[in-house]
Structure formats: C-alpha cells, structure tokens
Length: 344
Image (cartoon, rainbow, N blue to C red; front, side, top):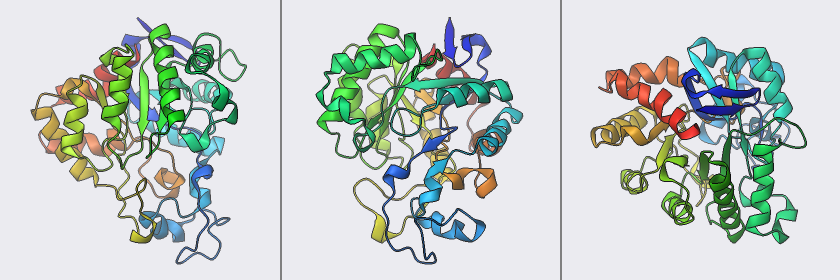
C-alpha cells in the first residue's frame, strides 16, 4: 500500500525511518502572553539569542520570537540533519491555525529529497477559524476530506495524515465537534488520525474513546504528547484501548518557573526518564503501539539556537535506549514499522 506525500504517493516499504510528528514551519505566537520576564526588557520583540537560552530553559514561551519557525533556509538546514542521520520521512503535523503552508512543504521535499507528509484539519480552540462555529461536524469533515482528496488551501498538494487535531486543557465543545469531524473524515479516507492532547491533562482516554465509538479503527488512532510528564497509569490506560501513543517530546527538558505554571502549562520530564518509562512499557508488552518523535515546534529546539534538532532521536536517544536495554528490534518497530502501519 502507499502513503500520500506532498510530492505524491510513496510505497509503505520506502518510508524508511519516520519521524511521525514534527513542524518544519510553525507559528505559535497566538499562545504568547506578554508579561514581565526576568533578564529581558522587551520579551515581545526580543529575538532568540544565546544570552536568552537560560530564560527559555525555565519558560520556553517567555519570548514571542521563540514561538515562530518560518525562515526557510534555517528550517531546510535543520531538517537535513534528520536526513543525514538516516531519516527518510517527516510527518508535518501543522494544521490550520498554526501556520500550515503546503507549498513550502513541497519546496522543502524537493530541496531535501525527504518524504514529507502534510496534516489535514484544525488545531486547538483558541486557534480555530471563527467560521467553524456555525458549521456542523459533517460540514467540517468535508473540509478535511477536501484537503486529503483534492488539496490543501486551494493547491493540489494533498494531506497524507489527519491532524494533529487539537484538544486543549478544557476539551471544549468546539474541539469535540472538530474531533468528531476528523473521525468522520478518517472513516471516509482511511488515514491515520493524530490527536493533540494538552500535555498536562490526561484527556487522551476520553478522546480515544470518542474516536473508537465513532468507528475509527484502533490502529488508526494516535494519542500525542504522553511523554511530557510520563504518567504511567495514564499511558497504560490509553494503550489498553489498543491505540498508538506518541513519545514526541524528546529534547524538551524544562523545569518551568512556578509563577507561570497553570492547568495547561507545567514541567517537562527529562529524556532519561522518558527512556526509562519507555523501557517499562516495552517490557509490559506495548512495543507494537508506540511511535517516537521530537515535535520540534520552538526555535530553541533547533541546533541553530542551542537545541538538539530534528535528528535528536537518531543521534542521541537511540544510543540511550540501547544503553537502557531496549533492543534494536523494538527500536525499529517504533521508528519504522509502527509509524508506517499507522500512516498506511
């Protein structure tokens, strides 16, 4: 079987190592809150520079500039490092509301030789187009299906995955309507469904149950961002539904300043802890339901700005997994087989 990329269909066997949840270009500035920041006089306008990395390590949303990745040459250089490390396929999960740009993805695929898969659908409530308010789930589903069968944003560039479909910390009625629309589109098209869950709330169970009740096959559902806190009971509850979970925050290790934490924004565990819990899940028999990614979505995650980049898993995490006793066979499942099966 084949998977739709921004350059056309690619056979499943040719996808190679896949990073199933990245953002080659993204604009998250809609989440920025202007407030005083220690060590920076003008956080609204200050660019990300070396002297600001300490600030961002305690609050990656402190500087507005950190929430935008849109320089083409920078992003091309950064994604090439994934290819140079052995990567072959990138899923760009940027949906409507956070800077989806299919024509740039097509250019990037041509310039890098990577297989790039574009996402269809909509992000969280605060980023949604106002016209969706008066549309039914069925009508919204038709817009998602159009992105898959006709093209995105009036182009002939087709999406090859649904999502990431956004669920915020409160799981609003609008977000549930859009999730149901995405499920309708999944049943019509057969594509994999990436569901963004706010990383600090355990809403993946509820979201997965809605998708399953609507008839989406369990092997086409992936609950994202389970590894920001790595709550073992939550991850197992999701896995026991038979769906995929995505460890997709490798490289994000933040102890966030207490004064900015809230229900939807908190601390991140370390990569070491991620690997330790990953090993525990594999030993418990869940290796066939896990996929791995970095979800690069902030400037300070890029090599250029002091981060680990899109190649972090291949260069740094794979050796760590081996050191912790995870077999090459299970690594290949999580990087090659599982994401290919989900996407196919």
